[in-house]
Image (cartoon, rainbow, N blue to C red):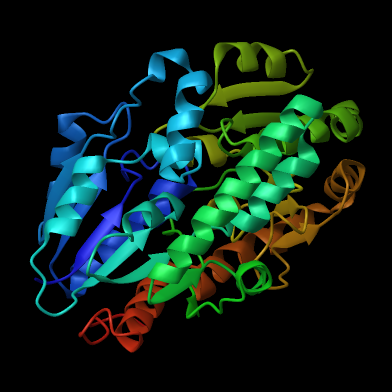
Length: 402
């Protein structure tokens, strides 16, 4: 029956880390082997976006599905939680779940188990009830990341909700891991978390990567900083707020300005963040190059989250020195391009005390690092080689990769 790939995150537009990783996987596999892609639309996915995906993957049979609505979704969490609980799924995974997709997978006539690749955490919902030999590519270990949410919960009600979500997420993840033949994670730290929580060893580590932007011409201005993340992802927003409260004052007084870029920005959040002095709130932009070109450096203030951060790699790929917490630089080897700090005040101090000459060296190393370790070429070679070794692809490494 050939190869089947399942993604519950539609990869267009590439407005955050998840779709970027999904699209890189889809393109890499398509270069060496035709396959069938079964993909769940986002709420706002249009027919035009589906057609665009088919054009980008000409050797791939793309079958798109809509997520199955909650029967009592109009009641909000009151309607969603019981149904998600009955399905044994975390509510956010149930929100992306398509019953017709699952039925089609289960109905495939397979005399000999065929290979299938599930991309992302939510795709683990489709491993049950099929006769496929699954590889599960995981962006993060839910048992670990969901427990971080418990410690960050601001009050008793939120803490109880976070504990419930951590429990159901861990159980879901354990069941899915028992049903997949092989599994990959994004960093050595994530491999350790996988083994710690589930006693399962990762079959390989596949760090997220980014393409070097074509025709990008950095033109940095003194004291111009940038923050790049999804506003809708809670750890990103918590980290930004903490940085503004505890670190931004020193930099603002020294004449720095900070531009905030990313998807998921609401009007209310825009007003909140724009009230800080020296802050420009842009939100989502289609082309990062003109926005990042004038930045002298970037800040990545995150204290929770898992795996290699695509935002960090994207900033490095645009030739930006990065000032980050250790969490924000997970999976990135020690490098001149990144300066680490553990608190907002330390991040601010590191930015303010780094000389222009060192900034220049950091920028040059940023581009070299991405080309050397986190390029699309490197990603494709490692993915295809690993999938071939684990028996999910019967191909050679594509010409020109390496």
